[in-house]
Length: 274
Ligand SMILES: Nc1ncnc2c1ncn2[C@@H]1O[C@H](COP(=O)(O)OP(=O)(O)OP(=O)(O)O)[C@@H](O)[C@H]1O
Image (tube, rainbow, N blue to C red; front, top):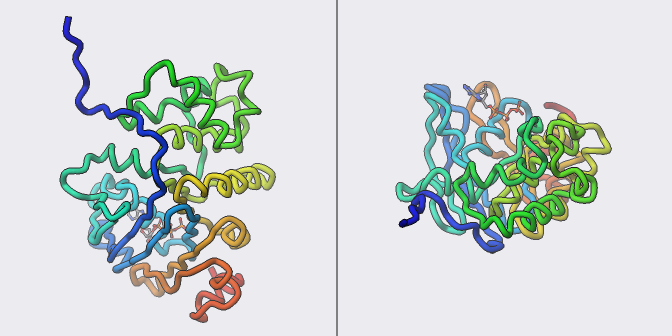
């Protein structure tokens, strides 16, 4: 009997090289409402880039453009380019699942599959992105992903318990493990701690610091202390008086906090508005 191989499946990649993400001239619309205007930003390999700015200035929209989620919103449009190590994430010959495999995402609210076991939650991302992993290596991958997400020691004795039985902070680390199992080159995080208590927040921040050595990270945060603690670079977004969001200033985090070039950046990072 011949065995049929699903042509859409790809083999699990070996640990990939660090990659730089480069957004060039990104504009975005919801219907005829333009929410970003020609935003360019380089997010260097192996660094944590924080996107900061007041509510509604387009940070989440920008983040979702970086893994092709924006295009799923009915009526949404965009212009510009997103390059992953120089290769266009939006090129016609690249599958959507390939973009998602290379650029993973963790959301504000932890969203594990609540009735699925911890183990199955970790491997769920593989199925969602069409990634093939030999059964014999799955146990190792689950351990590796949970270890990187800082959760292994807490759950190794109950891998068959449901993901929904974990605390909020543990659930968020489970979601990080689920993303890491796919071995993405970039991990996007949209306010990953905003639903968590201070202790869980600290654990996630430690995890982010450890992960930066092997995956490029882009994080949206409203918490300036968090941006200062976890990021190497910051980009300050602003949409003044109903105009589309732009990047006012970006650069190394210490410079953005201690000697910003633009008064609006200084006012925002020091809590004078937003
Ligand atoms: N699905 C959508 N449909 C229509 N408009 C949207 C949608 N999502 C966001 N917008 C609009 O796009 C603009 C930018 O929103 P976005 O969520 O990207 O900003 P943000 O800076 O991430 O805000 P916050 O910090 O509050 O999350 C806002 O005016 C918002 O109302």
